[in-house]
Amino acid sequence: MRRLIAVRFGQGLFALWAVSLIVFGLGRISGDPTYTMMAMDARLEEREAFRERLGLNAPLTTQYAKYLGNMLKGDLGPSLKYPDIGAGGAIVARLPATLYLAGVSLALALLVGVPLGVLGAVKRDTLFDQVSKILALLGQSMPNFWLGLMMMWIFSVKLGWLPAGELGGFKHIIMPAITLGSFQIAAITRLVRSSMLETLDTEYVKLVRIKGVKETRVIWIHCLRNAAPTPLTYFGMFAAVLMTGSVTTETIFSWPGTGQLAFQSVLARDFGLIQGLVLVFATIFVVCSFLVDVLYAYLDPRIRFN
Image (tube, rainbow, N blue to C red; front, side):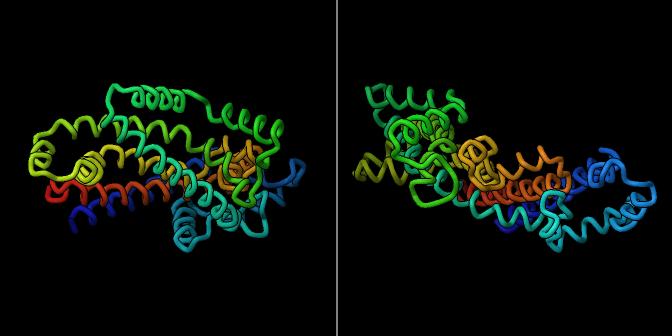
């Protein structure tokens, strides 16, 4: 187990280093940043002074070493849109809203998707199973932006039951969480159902039933645990996607998270902020992948001892 953790941790660090190298390289080959960060009519002397202040006149190896050192200290570089707090400060200010939305969407996906998948497998080919499969198909085929706009039109404009968006109380998060989690609920439902169907037909489940174990314990303890690795792999990536923010959902509902920040930074051509967001998003993906690998090994001893 320790060897697995050490190997996965080393692979994660290597992946982050590779991302930092790619981000640094793309930032240098995209053109002269002074034409983006300064007025078009700036004089040549002003541009040279600006490059000197940012260290852009130094060799690339020196620039990258400084960039990597600043990144390790939490300094993600300057931001055109937020010059006072920089890219790191802007991202930190938006992360709580995204994590709040991601947490509610994750809880919704688990509380709805897992029971639907389990019961769909147990009640295979019944009316309940058919309805759950139809709902899962609809959840995966409906675009998030369409669902969000329809919910906003019905529950905010027509009925006036829920606020149209922005960060606030519990009512403010209902529609964004459903919009963001609808696809994931459908995907988790289908994955859990297919994994449970394979597990229910295994010999050890038949043996557990012969021993007289209660059916609820057989399904929710023995079967679900052994069916968990496959959905868990997807769930880790799903959690990473949610925690990095959904551009579509956050933009539709004016949710002040990192997804909306990424959209705004692209419109403002704020390359420093975009690079900082890429690094933060990559870190979240690596951390989630690492946690999934550890949980996977815990659930499946065959991986643990390989």
